[in-house]
Structures are given as C-alpha cells and as structure tokens.
Length: 239
Image (cartoon, rainbow, N blue to C red; front, top):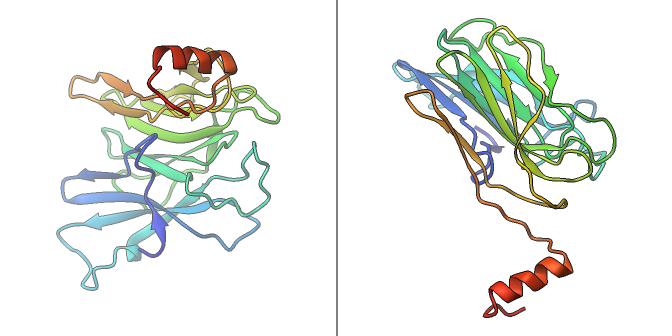
C-alpha cells in the first residue's frame, strides 16, 4: 500500500482490521489528496482472503473507496485539501457480517458514517451519513480520534475527543442501535476548565458485552493559579 497511515497509536486507537473466518478487512487512509474539490484523506477498505492471497503480494487490487476522512479544520479554518495525520477511519462488523465505518478528521464538525450494503463484502457502501453535530459555528463541535465498536446486540458505540462548544475538550460518547439513527453526544469526561486537553482514550469490549473506556489526561495549558497549585504539590519540579 503506497504512502498511507492506519489510524494513530495514542488517542482513539481505533479498530482498523477485522476478521471473519479466512476473510480479513482492513481500512486505511492515504497520506495525500490531489483533489482540491473533495478535501480530506481518501480512505479505502481492503478485503484479504488469506486462503487466496495475490501472487504479487499486493492487496490493493481488491479495495473499495468509502470516503474522505477529514475536511476543513473548523478551528484553524484551513482552506487546503484537508490532508492531516489525524484523519482516519475506524472499522467494525456486526453479527450479520455487515461492515460499519466512522470517518473522522482534525476538529471536524461532523463525523461520517457508512455501512456495507452486503455482508462480508466491500462491493458497495451506503451513502455517507453525518452525525455528531450538536452546535454550529466557529470553535464548535471539533471531533478528533474516533473509536468504534459493535456489541453483541448490533449496537454501535463511538467515542471521540470533542472540543464541544468553545474549545472545551472532553471525551464524548455516541451510540446507534440496529436500524436506528445516531444519538446525540453524551459527555463521558468533562474537565472543569476549557482549552486544550488530550485524553489518550481507548474503547474496548469484553466477551460479556461490557464496554470499557480508559484514558490518560494530558493538559498542557495551566492558569497561573493552577500552576501555583502544581508547584505546591510537586515542589521538586523546576521550570
């Protein structure tokens, strides 16, 4: 696969390969985009039959385009083609073999959802559905680092870092029941102060259908009062 990235290795850590019997599906995003009219990182799903691998060891011969991850950054208001290392797609599968995908970018106002029209197949996907847009306006609704999981009841669970209204970063949670529409945003973790936060969050599920979200906060911008409290707590630190 030429010049691509497969998610990120810190926040979100989405599922990007899933296997049923001898068939595996892999989602990836290209690192470049020459189409200025359609911004973002072009994202594809590849089907790999491990019992019948191509002789030339390339897997791109059986791939399907699912959409562009990322558009214009709503915080920096970038007017480029939107290519960004934060942009990627997450992949999961329900009990009937349908593939479900969420595409996200860097502070994108909306998340994008699509589903395969046939089970265990990348032949075609549904039209992109936008969700997660709770507010409209500058600095509102910046989604980054999505994770996606399907539970045993075919319910989808999505967790993102969301800048909310006016740059107040939090861990956000959205769901979609089988045959239903996406829920509104629920705050899982909301800090008491605004400005930049990175949560290094990860979403997982166990065999008993229990969901888990673990996170580790990185908050690099402190008020003068908070900085003073930090120095009182950790006097050995020097700056």
